Image (tube, rainbow, N blue to C red; front, side, top):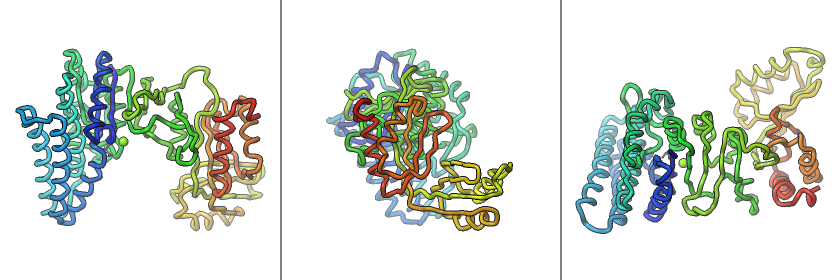
Length: 458
Ligand code: ASP
Ligand code: MG
């Protein structure tokens, strides 16, 4: 069994949908379960419609509902192409869901308020519609797609808008609902993002939650692989908007991907794939619009023996706080005292380096910086430096392999680095520098680590 998940742009147009169906057809022998996002942009529209309903703007709501109806119907027409009973029942299915949502929105407009529970019911409709669309389209291609209500499979808590699935209960439900279909050689098609609480209400798993659905469903059925089909070739060695020569990472471990997520280099959020990673189910990120590209494979531990850098990422708008105090000398409890202040003022600390009498750390949230400095000053000298950047190099054995370190520092010879932090796992080497030097440093590092051979770079 495999899980095949399509993101919004992979189902957002007639061409994309056709392509997606091809992909499922080609994987037929592997007993696929299909999970789909809403058509691109639809969830945003549903959120907007809910907000307008709360403001009592009924015409605004109706406009959005009409647009949603039209977009889904147009795709259905384009796929079926001629009037038929099949098209009628297809449209009736789509219409039923849209009518239901229109009614709920009308109710909200009357009351002028929406409960979190009703809101989930509304935003979930995007995935309802896309999955119905997908299942019908599969039948047109002679594939035995069956639409399965995600509510009947994904069991969650009642934390609306950000519900957490219960893997054990989902496994039991999947055994009852999904496995018999697969036995019959059917291909289940489900909406991502949606679940049902144990109290029976529709829930959603948080924005971008369809990846989470794919992971949970994969974990529930013990899939051999989870494929995340999207609109890029995979995870990249660097942001291709900054580094033109960035290339696709063929294979990366889960922890490496998690390190990169902080830097916004997330094709998918590592947190959401954890249920699958924990069970060692490999995850493949693939491009619906470029099927011949091999994509990126994410595994729990990475491929044995493969060492070296995987990717570099940058985060700007970083503030460095240098804290120096003689009280640190030979003392204990000093760091606890400092971090207690950061904790109380709810400011996350990212990088830390220490020496005998000083601590330097980076933060990216500065809304309580003045209070922080005020509380630190009675026992330390505090020096705040803003407009800094962190460049993170993620990979394996970054420093235990001396040649890598040599390449890194040789490539940075003209760039003053003010902090260096090597993760305890030899997995993340982070460098802090002035933000204005960040892009140049990134280019030089990318060239040395990913574009030149080791002899050239040394
Ligand atoms: N449609 C949902 C969203 O836009 C979930 C997803 O696409 O993964 O957030
Ligand atoms: Mg997405």
